[in-house]
Length: 450
Image 1 (cartoon, one colour):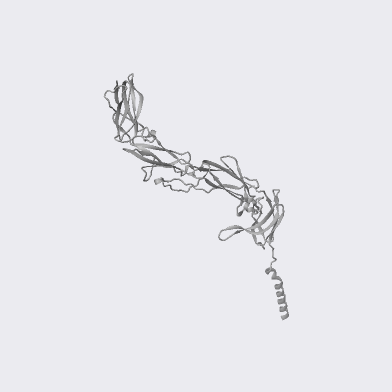
Image 2: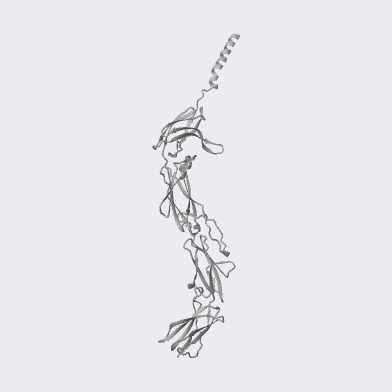
């Protein structure tokens, strides 16, 4: 009895030994692999790097393609990639990407696909020649100094870009100096989720000024052995011409792709404005200053009476009540060009008395004098106009200049033929620095010469 029990127990134990390992030790399934071919769409056959990436999501919300394995082949070759991170019944999302370090081909990749441990995946990739144009641009290395206030001829400085794309930014876009530009171009192929890859490389940067002869600037970086250097072009350029210069530019890569043409307007105004006194608008109480500027335009005009003190902004200047005033004035344009200070003597409006004849009965061929007085001015010049009666009308025949004496009076000598005459005084309009038009006497003197 004991033997039977022992035999059954032995059989049970033997069965347990034989059956239990089938559940504890499953047959392992190996890592996955990816094989495939690359077909090049161009005649050049550079070395191609093929890489497999796994798509991973992290607990903090970030997602990215993570490198798994890579292989190197030629443009029309085969490749094999191992995926050791996938074993057993574990699966993940992967993609295969091919890149060309010489830039002759653009990077390409498959769509994401599922891969399970032990699986052998077949994929195919087609490489296409570089068809992505470079990106060209112009950077500004200059700043604009422009006028803000003219108080005591102090000019405030503001840094303002002088580069304007398209139609420009108006007068504030002008620079009073040469403009330094930085010509730049890059040639990269951007891929979503991956770093930018170098393209075939920037070959030339082409530009012209005001649609003149094109300047083809070769990329000196092509002499480098590092293909990443080929993808960048940089060169300084200085614009010196007064006025508006249109800089048209584009870049071309080694594969023949060209960027779109763009135009940058550079505004330069190195010439100060010119301010003048407008005699035609002068009155007995004020004169007007008129400034002109053929570039950025007049920003403002400042003046002061005398040689000290602050300058006031404006173009209307009051005339002194008496005597003469010393006016200083200048203008500034939007580019910041400062005009040299100019000066002008402004005389008060003259008051005249009725001219008087020194002789009660002037004789023909004999000298007599016409005298008068001037008020509110001194030592300025004027003239007496002579009119002769003819057929009932006084007609102008001559004039004689005079200079006012210190006392304010003047005297002019005449020797006339027989006839009836009228004398009228004009004063303060005989010099270019006078601020007023002629002051015509409202009274006249008549004399009969026998």
